[in-house]
Image (cartoon, rainbow, N blue to C red):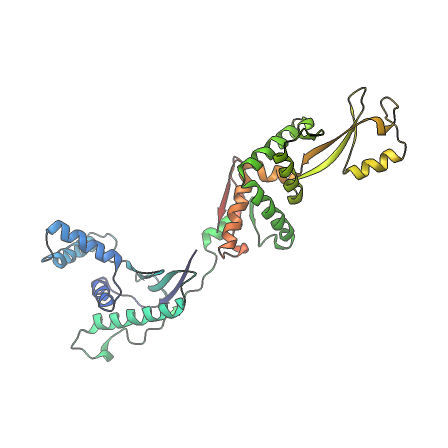
Length: 338
């Protein structure tokens, strides 16, 4: 996972000074990736390095004269495990015309110190570019630049997405979602197994169509592998075991019980079949595996995959209140924004 930290300064750097600033940073060990790539292509076009800077100046003047974007809008400086960036804003960008930052991996130590060092080098390059070697530093307009921390927060796009109809964020339902998140996490771990997912899908479809016998466990009828899956489903709340009692003569279902223990209580009470009058203990009893509402929810539209992605984002360090999800209009997929 990558993290971003940045500083802003309320100054405007004119277009003519920007290339000089990048050159100053390169002298200090910060090689600008974008400019270096451009110079490489200029060198290839000219078949040599003699007039590369002249061509760069020509391209810069031409692009700005014709009203295009500035030739230098910023640059990137790459190192092992992190990269700095420098963005020269426009004069209209009040309060944040210049932005310096760092993009880094979680393993990088002292990222803030690296950013502070980069800001100092940017300021030194600005001072050198503005006054030249023979001018006193006191005359530089960039003396004493005040760098301010740019606070991170939910962007407008995230806020719009999270507050839209049908969107679900953990921030909205945090108290109620705690148990549900744990339950879904266990379910996702199972559904990431293709065989388990396909078996549960068959059980769910059979149950929805009234073919409950397909989930029945007649002595020795269910494969050992499927029996193990049923145990996992039950532990994760994706299925529950039930005992169905049916009339042997008519074949009609009489009732369902949550466990064999419950059946023992019923048979001990000398209950009789409402169809044929025989003792319930003599009627047909079979174990069923019934999918739970959670199973249907997780399988519908690939919701299990969305839950898997949310778990991956959370484990990568993204706070749950900065993750939002909503179903697409067709109901066959989901959209997630972090």
